Image (cartoon, rainbow, N blue to C red; front, side, top):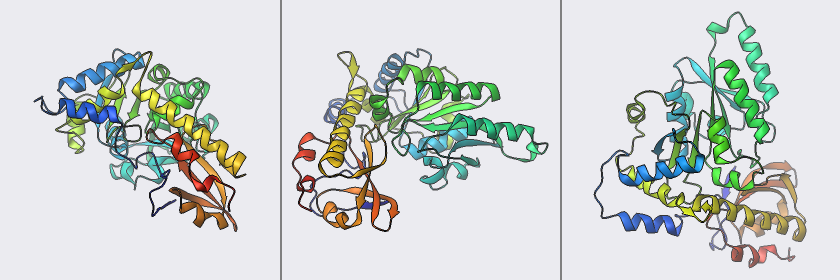
Length: 357
């Protein structure tokens, strides 16, 4: 995929991490800036954020660590959880398989890619692979499966249902595997889902992380072991990977702001709802006003549409987006991403939405 640059900075829908941070997050950083605290996550802001996350997940025993970014988190946590001879099962389109420059495999763990169905793993493919592996007389000479990795939402903006996650949970229990959920865009997945919630994830996943970088924070991800099941000496393990933040408070403060209750919800969930609402507005404009066809049916903040090649140059004059892949000789699939920073005004006041092609 190729990011398309705009020269006039009119409307940027390239990604959900091409901006700064939500005003409330920045305000909380400034408010707490002069206070001296302990380092390495032992500060009061990080502890308060952990407590807020435990309450939001209905997981009082959860152990939580704050890391800097998604690739760092995946490589660190997968390596910490697995034995040296174990690998991780994922969809062939998964971030750890495609867009992390071999970070997981750099730690010594094989990424075992299974077929992708619009970005998703299917339980049948997992079961078929595990059945074949454990029936193989030479299995001891092969990389042993230790984890199933899924993203919520997927790289194509699709979602797993409650039933699908439960099926993954059951197969992981059957074969003694970890179920790990990458939540880089979790706020947007939760906003778009009809049946998956934070408490459900905490119930079914062995490990998951709550994405901050793409969901209103300057940087940072909150790794959750919801059942108090983290490996021993986790701080030392994180430190060994170079992933331990001396100023962990910088991430802790941001998650404190994101999970501070706002009525019966939180800023984190509100951010997701706003972005998904605007994505649906964008979807309507593309389909109804411009007549573009969807490349994939995504209910989240990532929208994929098939654009005539003749329209690409004019479109990128007014809007930033990513070219995803060619569809045919005259059409290209492109990705358009809303975020906490996207506004209604951006979507309705741009000339590229008018029928003047």
